[in-house]
Length: 452
Image 1 (spheres, rainbow, N blue to C red):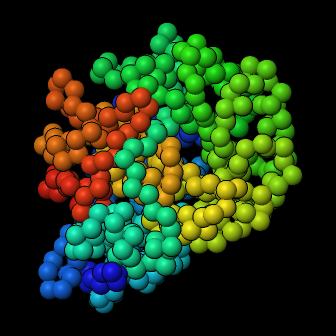
Image 2 (spheres, one colour; image 1 turned 30 degrees about the vertical axis):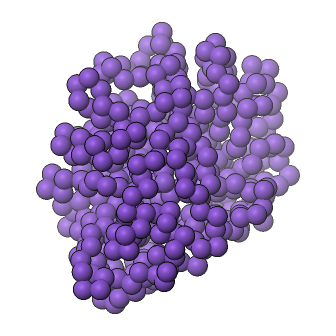
């Protein structure tokens, strides 16, 4: 099949306030609330109209970590990126493939946002959401699911039909342990009394978790202590686990990182944890990460890029400096993930990791999870289910519609509230293989606040 050609006739932006049930701390930031952005596009294909949608959380202090900016200023940066992407997409006016729309409108919007002072990571947020929504519309027009559409070349990108696209039925959930998270049930701290797990220990018992993502502060003594306490909980519970470590840009240079890693390796209480560690994610600040080589550092696991992935050449630059992988995140763009997966195909030394920014139940978690899993990611960071109570502030009708449309992906508790279903540390993806991009339900658009 050739790519679907479509003309965008409408692009609307919305947001919904999200309140976290537990504070989420990473790096120097602690998040307790933020908006979730939604995009709805309408596209014309062969005289018929099709709708596409996407969603992403607008997390503060990740896209731009400047301490001079407030959380609200971070949110407004992402709204600006969305507006620029919407305006560029509507201005195109031409019938073309989803990938061609991305290359024209998306790149144009990126340039406008950067010229207006947005960092590239924030600037590509809007185009990334537009790309997902346009892809959704194209897949619906073709009557294909995400996997079948990639195999058939529906998006018109140069990578999909050259990749071994998987049709995953499940994926392992990698549970994030934030820097403010309680570890054991007897540890004091916040507990919203909502019947959901509030500690690492209770989450393991509830969900059968065995893969974990551990946030680092970059301060050796506090990290040695906290990692040792995490390891002790996992050992006490008898978990045969695997872990990844997330540096969140907390290291200023490679020398400091090398000294830190040697301290971890020399710590006897961390011997088992280090043996079970799979990768180290973005330890160096993005200002220096693609300028300093890490090739000679004594780090025995792959070091991957995340926040530095703000332009098409980032992965190649990283490979030349000693990095061995990169993250897939829908907020950075579906075509970035496809291109990176193609680059590392048939090279066993390289890996694509699945990470998220507290993907919320509904469109965001479904699209991001299927994107990564279809590219061969076998375990993925999914933490929205721990920090937000199910569908959060979404209307109950919306939550129930998603739960009904995707049995196996969501569980409904005794009070009728749907939550992401995690059994034996795994997520069931079977229901995501339907026409469109991973969703047979949609947000209640009238319940959202418009972004003008």
